[in-house]
Image (cartoon, rainbow, N blue to C red):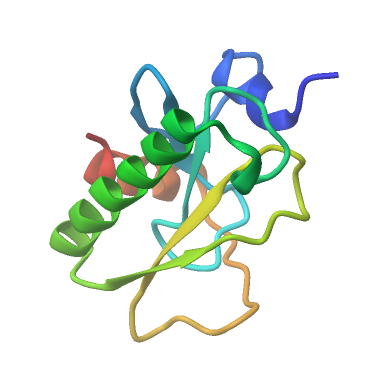
Length: 124
């Protein structure tokens, strides 16, 4: 059965897409810890980041680097990378802009228009 991330990539579940190329897909987390909390995933469904083929692994890392740099310019906040690997069995990296309001473990409740505003700022 496809993961929720594969369903998002395939357009079966809506998302706030930030970036897409031939190997990766990035979208806003719907349970963000910070404004701009983004997930970077390989299009190829593999459970763990370290199980990816080199080409896909480096593509994910390159996308995460590219988006982090863009986030820092647009949002003016350092970006934290988090690899947890237990919540969804599809390799992914959390990118979280760390502004002065960030608190560990806190989840923000954002309205659709707030997600869309952030998406518009971060989209590449």
